[in-house]
Length: 480
Image 1 (tube, one colour):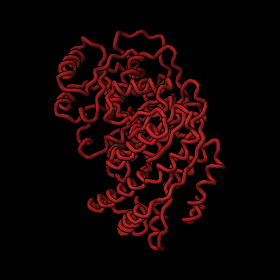
Image 2 (spheres, helix red, strand yellow):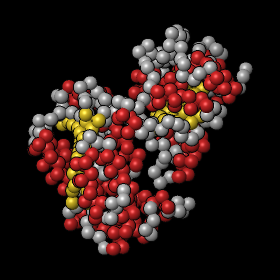
Image 3 (cartoon, helix red, strand yellow):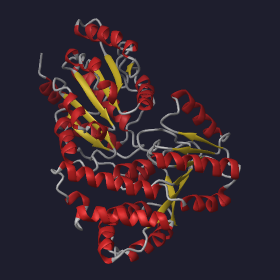
Image 4 (cartoon, helix red, strand yellow):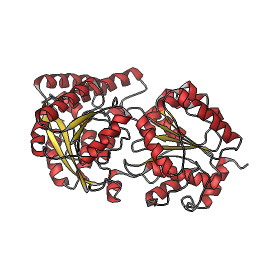
C-alpha cells in the first residue's frame, strides 16, 4: 500500500478538482451533487490543499462555501486515494446539524456524535470495526468540540484509519492548549476552515493550530471577494453614534486608565504575552470595557428613534452580544422596547434556545410572521439565517473574528434579498485627558480601521465614511 503522501502526489498529478460527477459509489460514500458547480476560488483552494500534501487552512469569508469546498476535497480523496473516513469537528450543535444537511447532499450518512455517549458510541465502534475489516466502504463522523475532547471519543481515535480526513470547522475554537493536545497525530490528512483562523490575543494558540493543520492557503477569500462574486449580497451601512451616560463615562475612564498601565501606549499585539498574568489582566479589562460599551443605556434611546422609521419592516435582526449578564439584560430590555412598547413582533434567540425552537423561529422569521429576532451570540459561529435583510448591531466588539463573523452572516444570499441594510451602534468615547487619549487612540486605531474597511465596501460608502469622520478627527486618525 502506498503511503498517503505518495497517493496524494498521484492524485495531484491527475488534476485535483476534475471530479467524476457521474461516479455512482456505494451508499454512504461521497459523490458530487448533480447540480453543484464549484466556483473558481473553490477549485483553487482544493488545488492548493493537495499541493500542500493534504494539509492547510482555508481562510474564506462567511458564506463563501467552505463546507462545500471541504466536501469536494473529501470526494476527490475518495475517488483518487480511496479515503475511508471523514471526521468533522464543530464548535456547536447547530453546526453539526448544518454539516449533516450538507453531507447528505453528497450522499454521506453521518454519525452525529454530540449528545449522550450512549447515542453514538456503539454505532461509532461498530462502523470503525467495519472500516477496518473492509465490510463498510466509508464512514462519516460529525462531532462537537466538547464531545471530541471527551475520554469516550478520544478512546476511539486510535481506531481511525490512516485514510481519514480530519476537518476542523471554525478551527480557531480548537486552539486552546487542552484541545490542541487532544488532536490526533495518527490522522495525517488535515483541513482547517475559518473566516478568521487567527486567535485573538493568543499567538501561541494560533501558531499551534497552523502547526497542526497547516498554514493559510491561497486564495484567501475576503468579504470584498465574496460580494464581487455574488457569494454575499451588497449592503448599505449606517453607523449610529451613541454617547455614554455620566456613570458609564466614569467606569469607561477607570477601565481605560487600567488598560493604559498595561499597554504603556503600545498596541495590544505588542504586549509581552509570555507573561500569562499580564495577558489575563489585559484581556479581562478589555472584556469589561467592551461589555460596558455593548450595554450602553443610550443605545435603547437610539434604537427607539431608529425603529420609529422602521416599524413596518420585517426580517430584522437585533444583535445584543456575547451572553454576558449585561447583554442578557440588554436582550430583555430590547425585547420589551420593541414588543411591548412599539408593537414590533419579535422573539429572543439565544444559545439556550433549543434546536427545535430555533427552527420554528427561523421559519416564522422567514415568513414574516415574526418581524424580528433579538439575539445573543448567534452571529458569531455559523448560525445560518440568510433571510435577515437588515440588522441592528447593539453589541460592540474589538475582536476581529467576531466583527467579521457578525457582519458577514447578515450578507448571506436569500431569494428576493437583493441587498442588506446594517445599522451599527458605535459608542463615542468620553472626553479624555492627554495620557488616556493616547491609550484610546492606540486601542481605537484597529477597531476604526475595520469599521472604515466595512464602510468602504458598502453601496453608500461616502455617506458611511462621513459618519465615521468624527471619530477619525477626534483621535487624529485621518491616515486610516
